[in-house]
Image 1 (tube, rainbow, N blue to C red):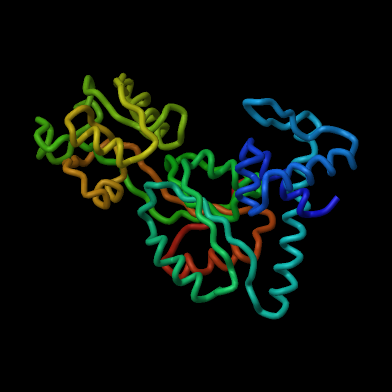
Image 2: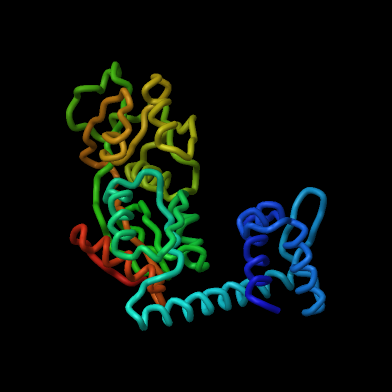
Amino acid sequence: MDLQQLRYVVEVADTSSFTKAAARCFVTQSALSHQIAALEREIGTRLFVRSSRAVRLSEAGSAFLGHARAALRAAEQAKEDAAAADGIVTGTLRIGVIPTLTAIDLPAVLVAYRDAHPDVRVELRVGNSDDLMAQLRLGSLDVALLGLRHDLKPVGVATRALSTDRLVAVLPRWHELAGSGTISLRDLAGLTFADFPASTSGRLQSDTAFASASIERDVAFEADSASMILGLVAAGLAVTLLAPGTVARSGADVVTAELRDGPVRVELLAWDVDAPRNVAKAFLSVVAAAGPGEVSAAS
């Protein structure tokens, strides 16, 4: 058993595909399959259930995966700690980010990070806050930039609040509420909404606000990108609630109205609460230099 075999197992588990895992590891599929088969023979059990349509972990594979991840993290940390002893930050920084991030200028932060730590490779993944938090807890990400309801406290990660905004109503330019100034959620009752998919953190912000106000709403359009949601609003098909910075950056042909009782959203930087890697600690320092923020550790 060697670290490369463990890396192959983790990649197949994460992608549910030998082909995709091989591409991410820069090897042929046959080479990757051969190494995993050799590992399975060594430990005496199948780690994956293979079919013509899908690949999934076996029960033994599920038990093995956590240890494989831990071993890879330990090996990576050992290498980074050795370099850190000489004052060098090295390794791969894996960042997860929501597509509606507005609290920081991430490209500028990454330029500053690269200038300070040129030996670090940076990998960026875009996703919703729920998925990113799950990846952070699994160790697949080192840091994550999230957007959550202000009273929702992430569990199992440390966080630093970067910004807090009240969502605004986003309306077609010709809508009768356009130009109304400040409105309330009840003014939006009976209108057709576009929003993020049900059960996601982005959707939960608005769902909770309307439920708390005892107002039913019709979410006819679901999309996982703010640009699609804004396109639906601009076309006159729906209205929505979004962070003001998201709307301002989009350039969409829409208008906004302040909501006196709208939901409050906080953007957070999150990281491993127990043992952040050196590459993550260095990133936290670069972000901290960009402005103040409130740090907390969730249990």
